[in-house]
Picture 1: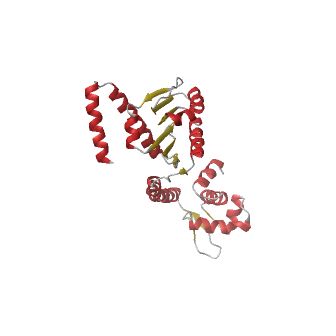
Picture 2 (picture 1 turned 90 degrees about the horizontal axis):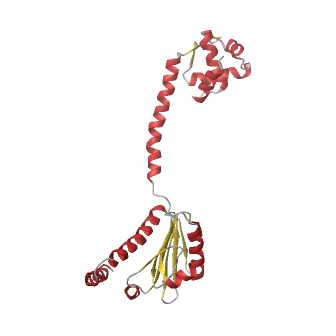
Picture 3 (picture 1 turned 90 degrees about the vertical axis):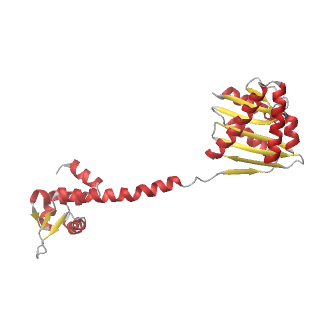
Length: 264
């Protein structure tokens, strides 16, 4: 018997003994359990269990006589049945897999309510940056992160980009200064910090004026993208406003302040 044919039948659901018995019957035409065992090399103690399994697969047929002669079902019928069965399994499996893929991913998040722990977490996220870091924060908080930011800037390929409320000198990266930190302080009773490392991990922190800390980190791809877009949007608005003539900029600032007041 050709070993490659036996291996192919095994990949289609036959056992080694079943494949050998089927091939022996194909070559012999018909045979009893004893003769099939002899031709296939299957132990006689196993042959009837094997023939029963082949009958269940529709691969052989017995004549029902006292000695029960078996004959092999034509290969095209056997393989056609296997093909139909596999196609049916695939047709049933495909929508089930698509449904699983469309289920919303679990949102993993870590919550911290302690300032020092929050700073340690932010440093860890900054240190994990390999490509690009986006960050917006107040200068006081950025000063505490300076060593981590310098290390990240030296090791990242895409760079470190910071939007700062207040004064913060940082030659190792690109710093954008918020045009009106006074308005931010007036509208928001606390300090906001957002950071995104490689569009892979993000952290949102709010440091209240009373000392309370609220900090959440996540590696959820969708939420991380939203936070990155927020930082990029803030940088873009500040860069755009800086290009406007003073009179136009003042009018735009007044309109934006009124809009924010209405929306909040």
